[in-house]
Image (cartoon, rainbow, N blue to C red; front, side):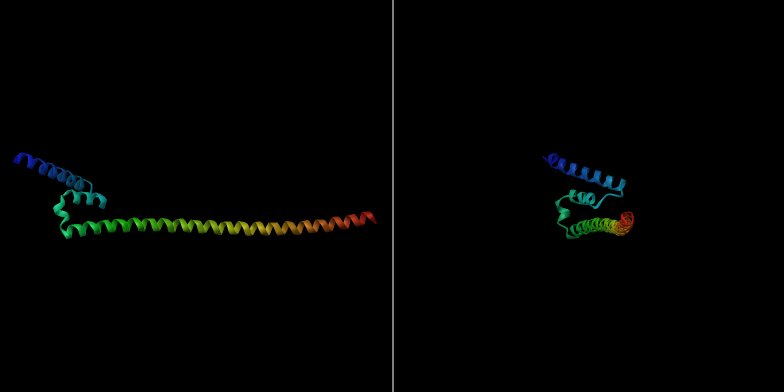
Length: 122
């Protein structure tokens, strides 16, 4: 009977050691991986307020970091969008200038043709 109770404990401790080895081999584990490691240590460690607070603080830092990156990307995109708007405004202004110039040319040509027509009729 004692061998049956030792087997689950052994498998838990083996899994815990495996996760600890993975954590030591890869120091860039995310806080989610660290949280999984902490949660796999068993329900006794979750009863400790310090451990729970530590996990929550790490998760809070991770979330804050991700939100900061997201905000930075949004600021960059907004800046690009603003530059596109300025460029389009410049193109529109140039198009209006060209349009006005062409209208003036058309009026000038109308007047010249009128003068030529009047001269030919006389």
